[in-house]
Length: 109
Image (cartoon, rainbow, N blue to C red):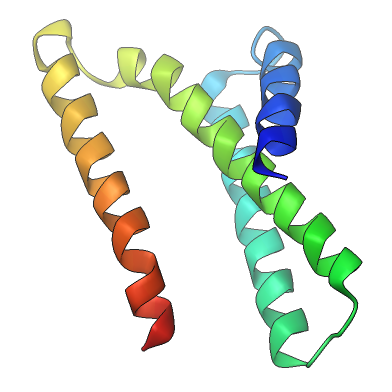
């Protein structure tokens, strides 16, 4: 499913990037991911047994995440001067990976 989401996000980014400002597109994809996350959480807490609905929600959520990550490569060039670009991107990447690694432990708590 994550591979399919990566494919969809690449196609969406190819279509959206030339037509929208990058920051607006990043805001849209972040909003889509947040709304999908909230919907999945509500469905899980309500005891929804329909796995297909949750699977589609996960696909939408991960497509938004992946599209945001792809757009970060473009946005970071606009936000930071060249001298700080690699350091800022590296710091964001490290923090993102630490959060991703620690998320199963946080979910278990």
